[in-house]
Length: 524
Image 1: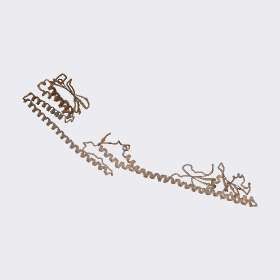
Image 2: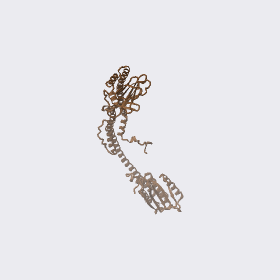
Image 3: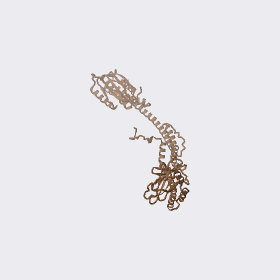
Image 4: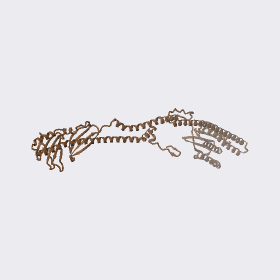
């Protein structure tokens, strides 16, 4: 996880990974959601209104047919009751019976079959061929009872006197009742049926059984039977459908138009500017911005602002490149002058060494000259590698340093040989200075202790470090050297190892010094 200014950057969420166009569409849809909710509520209210309207129409139709049904039966009941009273007192009941049956068979009365009683158990006037059924016992306070046959094709009406005796019996066929209560015929897709318990008499059927429906019912005769109506709810018309769908379409259209506007007028111009900016590489002198035809002036201003920034960056890069060139030249000049000054110092020391009046003074001058030469070698090699910027190459540095040490060796070490096995490696200037002084000090210790062979090796056994090993035959076990001299050099060598941030390994049995140094980059 990357960090910036000590703070962890949060991982992108699923929302962050969505395309900007999709996020804008979602935001616009949510923002316009109240319009969609209004549309849904309007649809629900419209459906409720349609159902309520159908329910009102069903109640109106039911009321009309209840009135017709009640009136149809009431006329015959009045006629039967009046005829019954006349039959009791009439001298010629046969004539009254004939006139009554004829009147019952004519409009506005409802045709059927009838039996009239005149105060006895036997009927005194009966429609030819009609055998009246046995009348059920009347309920208290009931003057009329109705009974639907189990087949649903006939309905029987029983009329009772206040004393509970039967006044008359009427029988109506289903077809007759259906025609009477539906005349004049009411237009509409509805069904009527007379219901008594589990018995049903259909009076009208729906013209179409498809679609939704509403129902209503009206009880008769103290709940003895019920007239039930079923009205089909008309399908939603085009105008009603438009009323329902228009708000939803407006919501979707508003979201779509908003998304198109954002996509074409904002996101696409920004994407074009982004493509140009992404293709821009440091060092390009000009930013070729595309022509942007968008009412959002801020996008064009953004492009021009970035173009100005790139021009400023390009100028700064050119200035930095020139400054780097000047700095490189200056550093090269500094190293060159330091190298020359050190060589002058070394030459002066050499002259003073030759003119010294004692061997001790000459040895002291030579010792100082070796260290100045070591530092001069570092600067010369750094100067040579400065253009490549790879650091200081140790192989030529140690080779040149060994040659200088051989050239300045005292008379007692004139036969000393230096054997090199140095791998290619590059180090920083600080490491190079410490390595140069370390090699100089150890080799000089060997010179002063009568060494005949010095072995210097550099082994790149690890990618980021190398092992520097110096072995001197005169320092091997069993060979004595001035103790004060060795202690002085050991302190200096140990200090240089610490400067290299490493531990010095000393094996006195073979006279070997080893130290691990950090390398920058090396080429074989």
